[in-house]
Amino acid sequence: MDLIPPQLLSHAAEIYRQHFPATTSFERAIFFSWGCTIGDCQFCYMSTQPADKKPSETKRSVESILAEFILAKKLGWDIGFFTGGIGVFSPAELEFMLKAIQEITGEKIWLSVGPLSKPLLQRYLPYIKGVVGSTETINPELHAIVCPSKPLAPYERMFDAARELQLRRAMTFIVGMGETHADLELLKEFIRRYAIDKIHIYGLIPQQGTKFEHAAIPSPEDQAWWIAQLRIAFPRLDIQCGVWEDRVERISLLLNAGANSISKFRATALFATPAAHEIERQAALGGREFKGTLTTLPVVDWNAEVQKLPFEEDLKVRIQYKLEQYLRKMRENIMIEIPVTKKI
Image 1 (cartoon, rainbow, N blue to C red):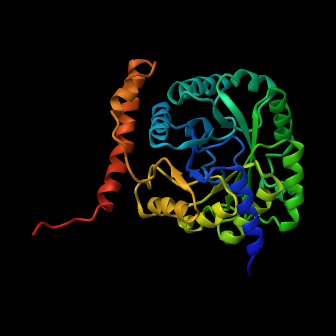
Image 2: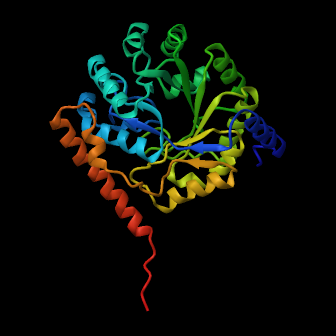
Image 3: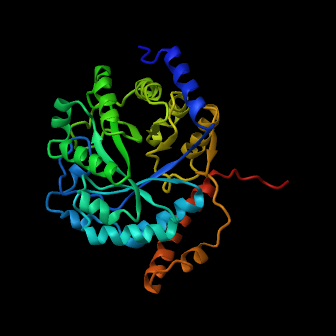
Protein backbone atom coordinates (compact mmCIF):
# COMPACT_ATOMS: atom_id res chain seq x y z
CA MET A 1 0.00 0.00 0.00
CA ASP A 2 1.40 3.38 -1.03
CA LEU A 3 1.12 5.52 2.12
CA ILE A 4 2.58 8.68 0.61
CA PRO A 5 1.08 9.95 -2.66
CA PRO A 6 3.66 11.45 -5.06
CA GLN A 7 1.89 14.80 -5.05
CA LEU A 8 2.19 14.99 -1.24
CA LEU A 9 5.90 14.26 -1.45
CA SER A 10 6.54 16.80 -4.20
CA HIS A 11 4.53 19.47 -2.36
CA ALA A 12 6.53 18.92 0.83
CA ALA A 13 9.82 18.95 -1.08
CA GLU A 14 8.94 22.26 -2.72
CA ILE A 15 8.03 23.86 0.60
CA TYR A 16 11.35 22.69 2.08
CA ARG A 17 13.27 24.26 -0.84
CA GLN A 18 11.44 27.55 -0.32
CA HIS A 19 12.51 27.83 3.32
CA PHE A 20 15.79 25.95 3.79
CA PRO A 21 19.12 25.46 2.00
CA ALA A 22 19.88 22.23 0.14
CA THR A 23 21.96 20.84 3.00
CA THR A 24 21.58 18.27 5.72
CA SER A 25 23.60 17.11 8.72
CA PHE A 26 23.90 14.36 11.26
CA GLU A 27 22.62 15.21 14.73
CA ARG A 28 24.13 13.30 17.61
CA ALA A 29 22.01 12.78 20.72
CA ILE A 30 24.52 12.26 23.52
CA PHE A 31 23.28 10.13 26.44
CA PHE A 32 24.62 10.33 29.96
CA SER A 33 22.96 7.15 31.30
CA TRP A 34 21.22 3.94 30.32
CA GLY A 35 18.90 3.83 33.34
CA CYS A 36 15.90 5.90 34.41
CA THR A 37 13.93 6.49 37.60
CA ILE A 38 10.70 5.96 35.66
CA GLY A 39 11.76 2.92 33.69
CA ASP A 40 8.35 1.75 32.43
CA CYS A 41 7.95 3.35 28.99
CA GLN A 42 6.84 0.36 26.96
CA PHE A 43 9.11 0.95 23.95
CA CYS A 44 12.31 2.03 25.72
CA TYR A 45 15.42 -0.07 26.34
CA MET A 46 15.78 1.68 29.71
CA SER A 47 12.69 -0.22 30.87
CA THR A 48 14.58 -3.51 30.43
CA GLN A 49 17.34 -2.67 32.91
CA PRO A 50 17.62 -4.96 35.98
CA ALA A 51 15.24 -3.96 38.74
CA ASP A 52 18.02 -4.09 41.33
CA LYS A 53 20.20 -1.70 39.34
CA LYS A 54 19.95 1.81 40.74
CA PRO A 55 19.54 4.47 38.02
CA SER A 56 22.34 6.44 39.67
CA GLU A 57 24.64 3.50 38.88
CA THR A 58 23.90 3.67 35.15
CA LYS A 59 25.71 6.94 34.48
CA ARG A 60 28.42 7.12 31.86
CA SER A 61 31.74 8.50 33.01
CA VAL A 62 32.23 12.25 32.71
CA GLU A 63 35.29 11.71 30.51
CA SER A 64 33.37 9.47 28.12
CA ILE A 65 30.62 12.06 27.67
CA LEU A 66 33.01 14.98 27.18
CA ALA A 67 35.21 13.01 24.76
CA GLU A 68 32.14 12.40 22.62
CA PHE A 69 31.35 16.11 22.53
CA ILE A 70 34.91 16.80 21.32
CA LEU A 71 34.45 14.22 18.55
CA ALA A 72 31.09 15.68 17.54
CA LYS A 73 32.52 19.18 17.28
CA LYS A 74 35.51 18.16 15.16
CA LEU A 75 33.53 15.85 12.87
CA GLY A 76 30.93 18.51 12.13
CA TRP A 77 28.03 16.77 13.86
CA ASP A 78 25.25 18.86 15.31
CA ILE A 79 24.18 18.06 18.86
CA GLY A 80 20.58 16.92 18.71
CA PHE A 81 20.34 17.11 22.48
CA PHE A 82 22.01 16.08 25.72
CA THR A 83 19.88 13.44 27.38
CA GLY A 84 19.58 10.51 29.74
CA GLY A 85 17.23 8.84 32.17
CA ILE A 86 14.87 11.02 34.16
CA GLY A 87 16.14 11.70 37.68
CA VAL A 88 19.61 10.21 37.16
CA PHE A 89 21.53 13.48 37.47
CA SER A 90 21.04 15.88 40.35
CA PRO A 91 20.62 19.55 39.34
CA ALA A 92 24.17 20.27 40.50
CA GLU A 93 25.61 17.37 38.47
CA LEU A 94 23.66 18.42 35.40
CA GLU A 95 24.74 22.04 35.73
CA PHE A 96 28.39 20.94 35.98
CA MET A 97 28.03 18.89 32.80
CA LEU A 98 26.25 21.66 30.90
CA LYS A 99 28.99 24.13 31.78
CA ALA A 100 31.71 21.67 30.74
CA ILE A 101 29.92 20.94 27.47
CA GLN A 102 29.71 24.64 26.70
CA GLU A 103 33.47 24.95 27.27
CA ILE A 104 33.94 22.34 24.53
CA THR A 105 31.33 23.38 21.99
CA GLY A 106 31.27 27.13 22.58
CA GLU A 107 27.51 26.95 22.13
CA LYS A 108 24.32 26.44 24.05
CA ILE A 109 22.65 23.06 23.53
CA TRP A 110 19.27 21.38 23.55
CA LEU A 111 18.47 19.56 26.81
CA SER A 112 16.20 16.53 27.22
CA VAL A 113 16.02 15.26 30.81
CA GLY A 114 12.31 15.01 31.45
CA PRO A 115 9.93 17.82 32.43
CA LEU A 116 11.77 20.67 34.15
CA SER A 117 10.32 23.32 36.44
CA LYS A 118 10.72 27.00 35.65
CA PRO A 119 13.31 27.49 38.45
CA LEU A 120 15.47 24.70 36.97
CA LEU A 121 15.11 26.14 33.48
CA GLN A 122 16.30 29.46 34.87
CA ARG A 123 19.25 27.72 36.53
CA TYR A 124 20.30 26.10 33.24
CA LEU A 125 19.54 29.17 31.13
CA PRO A 126 23.21 30.17 30.58
CA TYR A 127 23.93 26.80 28.94
CA ILE A 128 20.85 25.73 26.96
CA LYS A 129 19.16 27.02 23.82
CA GLY A 130 16.02 24.97 24.32
CA VAL A 131 14.35 21.97 25.89
CA VAL A 132 13.11 18.74 24.34
CA GLY A 133 9.98 17.07 25.62
CA SER A 134 10.06 13.29 25.17
CA THR A 135 6.37 13.32 24.33
CA GLU A 136 6.53 10.21 22.06
CA THR A 137 2.85 10.29 21.03
CA ILE A 138 0.06 12.84 21.43
CA ASN A 139 -2.89 10.43 21.29
CA PRO A 140 -3.97 10.43 24.98
CA GLU A 141 -5.18 6.81 25.06
CA LEU A 142 -2.03 5.51 23.37
CA HIS A 143 0.21 7.71 25.52
CA ALA A 144 -1.31 6.30 28.70
CA ILE A 145 -0.42 2.80 27.51
CA VAL A 146 3.11 3.34 26.24
CA CYS A 147 4.22 5.93 28.83
CA PRO A 148 2.16 5.11 31.94
CA SER A 149 4.40 7.06 34.35
CA LYS A 150 5.31 9.90 32.01
CA PRO A 151 2.17 12.00 31.40
CA LEU A 152 2.11 14.90 28.97
CA ALA A 153 0.92 17.56 31.43
CA PRO A 154 4.34 18.21 33.05
CA TYR A 155 5.88 18.63 29.59
CA GLU A 156 3.16 21.05 28.65
CA ARG A 157 3.96 23.13 31.75
CA MET A 158 7.65 23.01 30.83
CA PHE A 159 6.90 24.26 27.32
CA ASP A 160 4.90 27.18 28.73
CA ALA A 161 7.73 28.07 31.12
CA ALA A 162 10.31 27.73 28.36
CA ARG A 163 8.36 30.12 26.15
CA GLU A 164 8.27 32.68 28.98
CA LEU A 165 12.07 32.36 29.25
CA GLN A 166 12.49 32.63 25.46
CA LEU A 167 13.88 29.11 25.22
CA ARG A 168 13.21 27.07 22.11
CA ARG A 169 10.92 24.05 22.37
CA ALA A 170 11.27 20.62 20.74
CA MET A 171 9.36 17.36 21.00
CA THR A 172 9.69 13.71 20.00
CA PHE A 173 7.24 11.57 18.05
CA ILE A 174 7.66 7.83 17.45
CA VAL A 175 6.01 6.35 14.36
CA GLY A 176 4.91 2.74 14.70
CA MET A 177 3.57 2.42 18.26
CA GLY A 178 -0.09 2.42 17.26
CA GLU A 179 -0.85 5.95 16.15
CA THR A 180 -3.07 6.40 13.09
CA HIS A 181 -3.12 9.09 10.44
CA ALA A 182 -6.22 10.45 12.18
CA ASP A 183 -3.87 11.51 15.00
CA LEU A 184 -2.23 14.05 12.71
CA GLU A 185 -4.67 16.77 13.76
CA LEU A 186 -3.88 16.15 17.44
CA LEU A 187 -0.19 16.48 16.68
CA LYS A 188 -0.61 19.68 14.66
CA GLU A 189 -2.74 21.24 17.38
CA PHE A 190 -0.11 20.37 20.02
CA ILE A 191 2.64 21.97 17.89
CA ARG A 192 0.58 25.14 17.47
CA ARG A 193 -0.47 25.34 21.13
CA TYR A 194 3.07 25.19 22.47
CA ALA A 195 4.79 26.93 19.54
CA ILE A 196 7.08 23.95 18.98
CA ASP A 197 10.21 24.90 17.04
CA LYS A 198 11.54 21.41 16.31
CA ILE A 199 10.29 17.84 16.15
CA HIS A 200 12.19 14.56 16.10
CA ILE A 201 10.30 11.99 14.00
CA TYR A 202 11.58 8.54 14.94
CA GLY A 203 10.58 5.11 13.71
CA LEU A 204 9.93 2.49 16.38
CA ILE A 205 12.97 0.35 17.21
CA PRO A 206 11.66 -2.94 18.63
CA GLN A 207 13.69 -3.53 21.81
CA GLN A 208 14.13 -7.00 23.25
CA GLY A 209 12.21 -7.39 26.49
CA THR A 210 9.69 -4.62 25.77
CA LYS A 211 6.04 -4.67 24.76
CA PHE A 212 7.12 -3.87 21.20
CA GLU A 213 9.81 -6.57 20.95
CA HIS A 214 8.04 -8.33 18.05
CA ALA A 215 6.40 -5.27 16.49
CA ALA A 216 6.91 -4.50 12.82
CA ILE A 217 9.04 -1.47 12.12
CA PRO A 218 7.24 1.40 10.37
CA SER A 219 7.68 1.51 6.62
CA PRO A 220 9.76 4.24 4.97
CA GLU A 221 6.56 5.59 3.42
CA ASP A 222 4.78 5.84 6.76
CA GLN A 223 7.63 7.74 8.41
CA ALA A 224 7.85 9.98 5.33
CA TRP A 225 4.08 10.61 5.43
CA TRP A 226 4.29 12.19 8.88
CA ILE A 227 7.29 14.29 7.89
CA ALA A 228 5.64 15.51 4.68
CA GLN A 229 2.38 16.40 6.42
CA LEU A 230 4.20 18.43 9.08
CA ARG A 231 6.44 20.13 6.50
CA ILE A 232 3.37 21.32 4.61
CA ALA A 233 1.54 22.41 7.77
CA PHE A 234 4.60 24.12 9.30
CA PRO A 235 6.96 25.34 6.57
CA ARG A 236 9.63 26.61 8.99
CA LEU A 237 9.48 23.75 11.51
CA ASP A 238 12.84 22.04 12.11
CA ILE A 239 12.14 18.36 11.40
CA GLN A 240 14.66 15.65 12.21
CA CYS A 241 14.33 12.09 10.96
CA GLY A 242 15.66 9.29 13.15
CA VAL A 243 17.01 6.17 11.43
CA TRP A 244 18.65 3.02 12.78
CA GLU A 245 21.49 1.36 10.88
CA ASP A 246 19.08 -1.08 9.25
CA ARG A 247 17.09 1.80 7.70
CA VAL A 248 19.66 4.08 6.12
CA GLU A 249 18.31 3.34 2.64
CA ARG A 250 15.18 5.38 3.44
CA ILE A 251 17.04 8.63 4.14
CA SER A 252 16.70 10.15 0.66
CA LEU A 253 12.92 9.60 0.86
CA LEU A 254 12.72 11.22 4.29
CA LEU A 255 14.78 14.19 3.11
CA ASN A 256 12.57 14.58 0.06
CA ALA A 257 9.58 14.52 2.41
CA GLY A 258 10.99 17.63 4.08
CA ALA A 259 13.26 16.50 6.91
CA ASN A 260 16.11 18.86 7.80
CA SER A 261 18.54 16.48 9.48
CA ILE A 262 19.33 12.87 10.34
CA SER A 263 19.79 11.19 13.74
CA LYS A 264 19.66 7.94 15.72
CA PHE A 265 22.63 6.40 13.87
CA ARG A 266 25.29 4.91 16.15
CA ALA A 267 27.92 7.16 14.67
CA THR A 268 30.94 6.37 16.85
CA ALA A 269 30.57 2.60 16.73
CA LEU A 270 29.63 2.56 13.04
CA PHE A 271 31.88 5.35 11.80
CA ALA A 272 33.18 4.67 8.26
CA THR A 273 31.17 1.43 7.94
CA PRO A 274 29.09 0.72 4.81
CA ALA A 275 26.03 2.09 6.63
CA ALA A 276 27.84 5.37 7.33
CA HIS A 277 28.90 5.68 3.68
CA GLU A 278 25.31 4.96 2.66
CA ILE A 279 24.01 7.83 4.78
CA GLU A 280 26.26 10.27 2.95
CA ARG A 281 25.22 8.74 -0.40
CA GLN A 282 21.55 8.98 0.53
CA ALA A 283 21.97 12.66 1.36
CA ALA A 284 23.28 13.23 -2.16
CA LEU A 285 20.42 11.20 -3.64
CA GLY A 286 18.06 13.45 -1.73
CA GLY A 287 19.63 16.52 -3.34
CA ARG A 288 21.40 17.64 -0.18
CA GLU A 289 24.98 18.56 0.62
CA PHE A 290 26.05 16.59 3.70
CA LYS A 291 27.67 18.82 6.32
CA GLY A 292 30.31 17.15 8.46
CA THR A 293 31.43 13.57 8.01
CA LEU A 294 30.56 10.04 9.11
CA THR A 295 33.35 8.42 7.11
CA THR A 296 36.58 10.47 7.22
CA LEU A 297 38.63 11.44 10.24
CA PRO A 298 39.99 14.98 9.92
CA VAL A 299 43.61 15.77 10.71
CA VAL A 300 43.37 17.03 14.29
CA ASP A 301 45.82 17.30 17.16
CA TRP A 302 43.42 15.64 19.57
CA ASN A 303 45.68 16.03 22.59
CA ALA A 304 45.93 19.76 21.93
CA GLU A 305 42.14 19.96 21.73
CA VAL A 306 41.88 18.46 25.20
CA GLN A 307 44.74 20.43 26.72
CA LYS A 308 43.26 23.80 25.79
CA LEU A 309 40.13 23.09 27.84
CA PRO A 310 39.88 24.73 31.30
CA PHE A 311 39.49 21.46 33.19
CA GLU A 312 41.55 19.95 35.99
CA GLU A 313 44.55 17.99 34.74
CA ASP A 314 43.25 14.67 36.04
CA LEU A 315 40.01 15.07 34.07
CA LYS A 316 41.93 16.03 30.92
CA VAL A 317 44.05 12.89 31.20
CA ARG A 318 40.93 10.77 31.50
CA ILE A 319 39.29 12.53 28.54
CA GLN A 320 42.39 11.95 26.39
CA TYR A 321 42.36 8.25 27.26
CA LYS A 322 38.67 7.87 26.42
CA LEU A 323 39.01 9.92 23.25
CA GLU A 324 41.78 7.63 22.04
CA GLN A 325 39.57 4.62 22.67
CA TYR A 326 36.89 6.08 20.41
CA LEU A 327 39.43 7.07 17.76
CA ARG A 328 41.07 3.65 17.78
CA LYS A 329 37.75 1.97 16.94
CA MET A 330 36.98 4.55 14.26
CA ARG A 331 40.42 4.10 12.67
CA GLU A 332 39.92 0.32 12.69
CA ASN A 333 36.64 0.78 10.82
CA ILE A 334 38.37 2.96 8.25
CA MET A 335 41.11 0.37 7.69
CA ILE A 336 38.55 -2.39 7.25
CA GLU A 337 36.83 -0.39 4.51
CA ILE A 338 40.03 0.40 2.59
CA PRO A 339 40.56 -2.16 -0.21
CA VAL A 340 43.96 -3.82 -0.25
CA THR A 341 45.86 -3.28 -3.51
CA LYS A 342 48.73 -5.62 -4.30
CA LYS A 343 51.82 -4.17 -5.93
CA ILE A 344 52.82 -5.90 -9.15
